[in-house]
Image 1 (cartoon, rainbow, N blue to C red):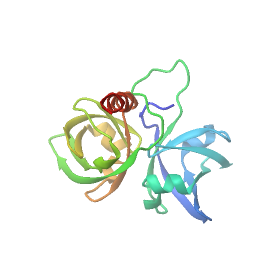
Image 2: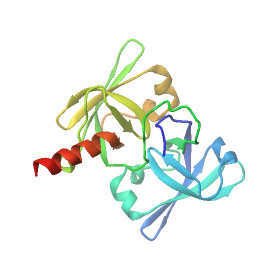
Image 3: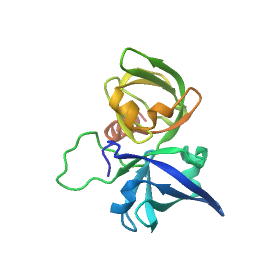
Length: 198
């Protein structure tokens, strides 16, 4: 389980195709604190650490199913990636409940700079049944955020300078794809209501 509070922006050191899978070699100072079989969220995608090289680089594997449902296939060598290690018992819960299971990808349709903040707007396919709620929680590339403007098939989030500088948001531009994980409580409520309504 994660909280959507990004610890570090890693860099893709190398990518290797292995049959239908993608091996990602990630460079981050957090590698020195990792261990084999640990769960780490990469742009919101929970992946297992399978190999560690020294104190700066480690490897994770993304299988075909994961690649089909996330933006990991868009990565190239040098790409920045949001990292969050799984939460530990007793920690403060600063974000919201994040599972590291991406529901779908969205496309950035607008980036608007304000006086000291930014508004990012994203569009997504509604056929999968996911919805946002104004002032509700949403995870974008692993970052816990609050929905500012919720519409059918789109939403906006407001980004403060700290988040802009310490996550991949300063690299996101119009046309880029991002990973979305919708609020888990909202997903269960939507599923129950759908069941009641038939």
